[in-house]
Image (tube, rainbow, N blue to C red):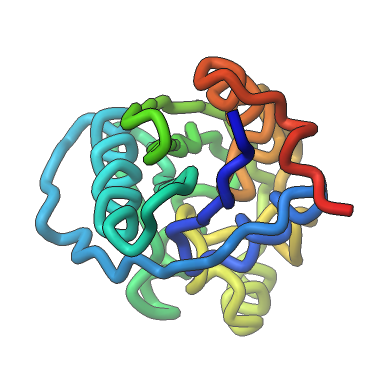
Length: 198
């Protein structure tokens, strides 16, 4: 079985960097899927459905490829949070998050067009946030970073200063669980090292 191109159906620079870090150079195709179409209250179901929809939107552009879609949300106190709409929402969210913990859910959908198979999985990581002053919250939101991220923080950026610890997969919090990707590729009959580019 030949090794098909790896397509990332995501605009996320963080997901692309994660793949590049482990030797996978993805073809990036942004799905532009309208996420508001999907209204689900259970976080694992929500992120898996959105990940699958993103991958399915991009798949018709390719004859043979592995197409990966992902979606992340933060569940905190029974509420589901994606990217904050604006700075005011980000500040309000951090006032709830600080000194608290939340569960970061990332849905992963992998469509193998060569074998006509689709795998959909979810990874969950618990994130513990630091106690923060109002001025620290305002300063962090002013960087603009929280507005680009599910959960209003980036573990690979300034946000790492305000995460006390995580329980579970580290890369999942950045947007894509690398161990889960390795397992999904194996389930489809690939070795992750097959995708390393010289």
